[in-house]
Structures are given as structure tokens and as C-alpha cells.
Image 1: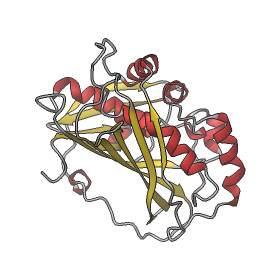
Image 2 (image 1 turned 90 degrees about the horizontal axis):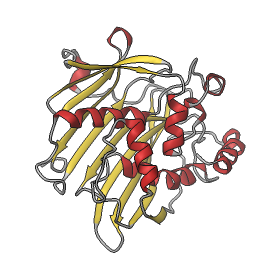
Image 3 (image 1 turned 60 degrees about the vertical axis):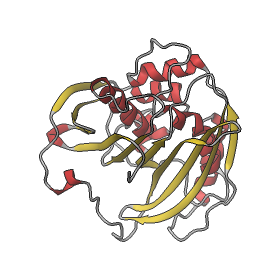
Length: 287
């Protein structure tokens, strides 16, 4: 989150009154980019991906989200966007990768607001992104939901994930001790400088006792760990699908447990509290 975008968001936030029936901006944010390899390596290092890479090694499954993040910020910081940018909380993520992307490719990214929906704690927005090699078809796409917290009736349907219906926790594979400065370190690598992730004082402004880890760091760290024990696809250019739901913030500093079985994984905190669950599967959704 650039300083200019942050200042613009701070100025406009008090003027916005979030509600699920507000109009959404209809103009997508589009840009072309090439991967900056040092930036990519810094991202891989903070998220736990292998950093010893060949020149044509595929990008991590979650990295295009970082490339598209500046466009998403411009979209959500605009005057016509109905939710205040500061304090938005990432609540879910779905990624479909039609084939692996590589650092040498010039990419075209398009980001747009897809819909608003009521949530038991406020209003949720879906931000969609499409990534293609310039002049080609879509190769990577995602849908993220973000929550603006405010008083609202309990209108959202509960999650239908099987682990929410009393299923046994997944087997534990690792325990991670997360430092207090993790949010600042990930912000430097990703560009996401949302104040809720950076310092106790800025997090308290938005109702958190401590800074919380970025949702995209937690999912990327789980994907990196999960990939060490699972060949997601037989070949790099085969499709992959990721689905994740962020259930509870991860406070910093803190200790979390990574657990996995088959294609599923989860991150748990104290007393077994589930922070996120997810799956990575070969193929396209519904196939």
C-alpha cells in the first residue's frame, strides 16, 4: 500500500458508509508488468518457498496476487468504491491456475469489483483478477473476499466446510513461531501496508489488540509447506485450483500449528482455534 494510496484511503474512509446494496465501480483496473526477480525472491523467502530457482522456474501459485495487488488497491481506494479501504480484512481466496506462469513472461492483469454481500459482521466485497500472458488467453484468475466490519444483521450463511461440522482436526506437521515484525516484513515484500498488520497502535485503531498477520502470508506459507509433501500436478503446466477461507485473525507475535492431510491443510492457534483451512487440487474446479 503506497503512501499516496494510504493517505487517499485515510481521507476518504470517514466519508464512506458501507452497505451491501451500494453501487460498485464498473471500470476494471488493467496493467501490464514483468516480474522483478529480486522482488520475487524476497517474497519467496518471507513465505517459505524455495529461493534457489532456475531462470524459467514457475512462479509460486500465490505470487500473481501480489503482482495484481497495486491495481486492487487503486480500485478499493477510489472515491466510488463503497467500502473504506483501511481496516478491510481478507476472508476468503479462490485461485484457478490454468498453467504455470514464468518470470520471463510479460503479463496483463485485470482487476475489478465483482459483487457486494451482507456478512454477519458487516459487508463483504469480492475482488476478481485475471492474469494472462500479453496477447494470450487467461492463465491465472482469482476471487478474494474482503470484509468491512460494521454493525449488521446476521444474514450470512455459515461455512459448509466439513471441518466446521465437528470433523477431527487434520494431523499436525509443524509449529511456527511468528515474530511481532512479521507484518512489516511481509509488507516490504508484498506492498500491502494495511495498518492492521504493522504495529500495535495502528492495529488498535481498527479494533485489534495486536497486529495480525496478512491473510495472504498465511495462505502462501501453508501452500509452500504443503507443496513440499505433495506434487500438485504431474507437470508444471497442468491446471491447479486453490480454495481457502480465513476464519480468525492470526495475532502477532504468536505460535500457530500447520496441519495437513491429502490435498487439505489448515492453520490452528491456541486451544485448536482454526485460523484458516484450504485445499490445493490438480485440475479445474468441478472437474
